Image (cartoon, rainbow, N blue to C red; front, side):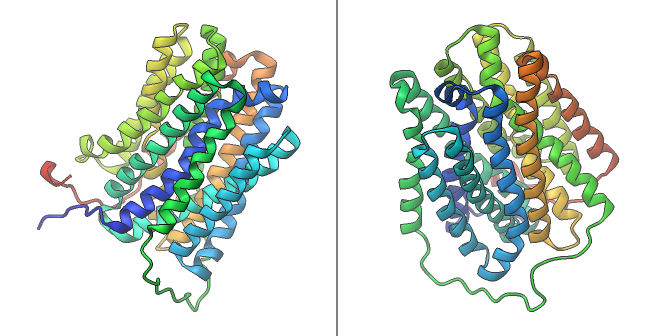
Length: 390
């Protein structure tokens, strides 16, 4: 019996919802040097924007099981996009750091609610085929990441004072997607037992810690790679921002082709391979003093990062004993702690020791991720697809 991934309307709707929020993520992280220059802040203060987004993810993780229980995953995703749209408009209009940090929180809350429900929606829709379907949906989402980076970077390079306006491209994208949605009513009956709750296993929490390390290493690179490139190559903030588009390009390539190339490997083995690739990319980036080589290092690091979120999330769902909404809520809190702590800590270390030495925290995080996958194996079912079925 053959099994194929049918990229139906449901798949494309969920994928493009994540494209919209990735426009913000792709443009926000690498433009930290621009924001810091505009506001005249230190690395530590600028890092509070990442902390704000991370805290928003924590709160979204706590709220997600309750919102999804009340409204269903489809409506909850649209609620997330509404909050995201309000937040990003407010962020672009924010005149100072006193306003940009709280508006980053609102935007981040909407981002997390949208991504959380995209993850559970794909997992529920495709079941055993979810590893392949999720990585391909994430590959499409990476188009938003790359697009956001390129749009804002291009504006910054040509019209320095108007770079934030590029983020607003997400608003018409959300509106078009909403108008083109499937308008047939969703049948959702809240579970009589209430939102998914209960005690999670020790294996889940070890996997949760590994997930924190994966996300922390990702955002350390995506938020501060531009600062490292500036420090090492003397590139302008605008040029370095364009260079970081390589990170999103690497993620897109890894998400679309990674599952195909590694389809015969177990999920945990795939995750270890991606961690190793990220380590190689980081090493190239960290040792480089050349703009082109730094570009290559960021690209390879993006390849390594590409599927860690999806694979590590599926590990947690596997350990959740049939409670995916609860598992994803906890994963959102994990991501929030990583996003809040990693860029901020790197910023503090950067102010004290320089961005180059501060970046040595990344291989430590990668080692933690690797050890936990080795010590706590999962058993996620995955049907292997033939090459002509992908």
